[in-house]
Amino acid sequence: MEKKIRVRFAPSPTGALHIGGVRTALYNYLFAKRNGGDMVLRIEDTDSTRYVEGAEEYIIEALAWLGIKFDEGVSYGGKFAPYRQSERKEIYKKYVKQLLDEDKAYYAFDTPEFLEEKRLQTPNFQYDASTRGFMQNSLTLSENEVKNRIANGEKYVVRMKIEPNEDVLVNDLIRGEVRINSSILDDKVLWKSADELPTYHLANIVDDHLMEITHVIRGEEWLPSAPLHILLYRAFGWESTMPSFAHLPLLLKPDGKGKLSKRDGDRLGFPVFPLDFIDKKTGEKASGYREAGYFPEAVINFLALLGWNSGTEQEFFSMQQLIDTFSLERCSKSGAKFDYEKGKWFNHKYLQIKPAEELAKYLLPIFNEKYPDNPQFSIFNFQFYSKLILAIDALKERAAFPKDLFDLLLFFFVAPVDFPENDVKKRWKEETPKYLTELLSVLESIQDFDNEELAEETVKVWCEAQGYGLGNVMNPFRLTLAGEMKGPQMFVITKILGKEETIKRLRYALETLK
Ligand code: GLU
Image (cartoon, rainbow, N blue to C red; front, side, top):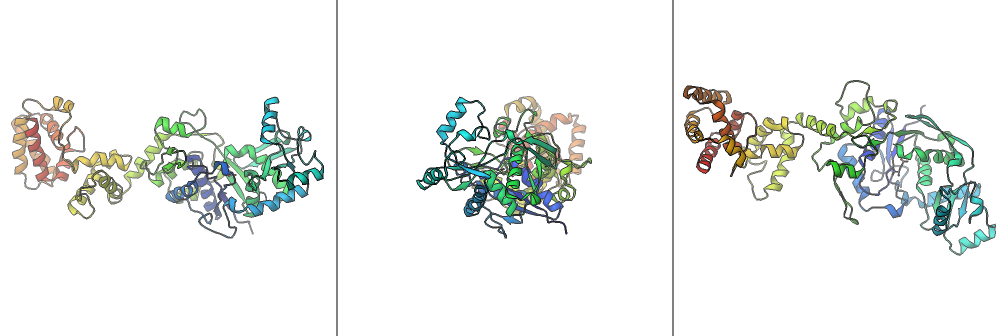
């Protein structure tokens, strides 16, 4: 029987999850589901200096919002629990000891100050086979000395003993063969006595092994770590169960020049995080797709295509369609430009296929937030709600976000009080009051006001009979109803406003503008 596919998403809780990390989670999910596999959420929190409160909860909430589901892991449970690395301290100790016992790792006592000095003295200083013989470690000190130092509570780290001049082959499912020579690697720290915690490298490998991970799919920034990881698998004797690697292309700035960063988002005005996040310590704020009014389906569709293509012309994919078509072979090697406008476009498209009733659910909270004291704006007010549904259908074509839609249709519910000077100057002529006063009577005479064709026909016939240019009547009419020169077709507006309100607004404008 084929081995069950198992992947993991293994973020470090160091702040809001970057959109590139979301894409990594998504591709892991698609790959797992496509292949009937399981996906694990592991929290890699062994670096206490970078730990940010709330980041773990944030990651879980963000992925749940997007519909990326885990089979096991932090907050999901499972047979390999605990899934939070800070709770697995004892497990790692055992494996560090194994490497030490087998001479594949060693104790090192060099202080951070000493190492800093070395780096200043020797450019590109590397702690490796060529230098370890001159440092304070269990390879240079006597066994007794090492024992004493440890017994006296001296701080130490455990370093991997990397043999030089060995070719390490990373067989990447996206990039093909990447060969590197072990001489360029340094003797990475695997464990620190100061906090009794492993570093990322050791914990990552031990957990991937213990959790029976078959595929490691992660961002390109981890590719340089892969050779060390492979050497660790070898050192433990786990080569036969070593996972396959796939390193995803970088997300690039919109202009393609360099890696996408939070600053690009701030500078160009788009989110690079799934949800809003405020770092409690620094007060730094990150803005998210959810709060900016994106639909999760649109974000998923957009992200799926940043680094993968189906090989067809198809642009719209539901999560299920993505699962049905995803493959690592179709992931690109080169970086993907973060085309923010495309993201907006997707949201616009997804907004179009949402029924008005669903969009109303997004708009009601905006009404309540802006008009907290107006009980009219409620789903229980039938008149308001039915008008809202009509207004949504009349205007959604022009909106990319619920907030846009709100701005576009607000005039249906809040009558204009004053009118922009520019529009007035341009549209309100000397004879306008005369035309509109007559129009008032014409409108009053219309019995079936809801019939927009009839209303339009009646007004047009009157206009023609009087020899008034249609624009000279319609433009100021629009201004009186919408408060600006905007909005949908005029008789869609009058229909949604209703006869009474239309006439009321017309009267008000005539009185105010004279
Ligand atoms: N903890 C690493 C991160 O924050 C995991 C990298 C990996 O997937 O191996 O992305």
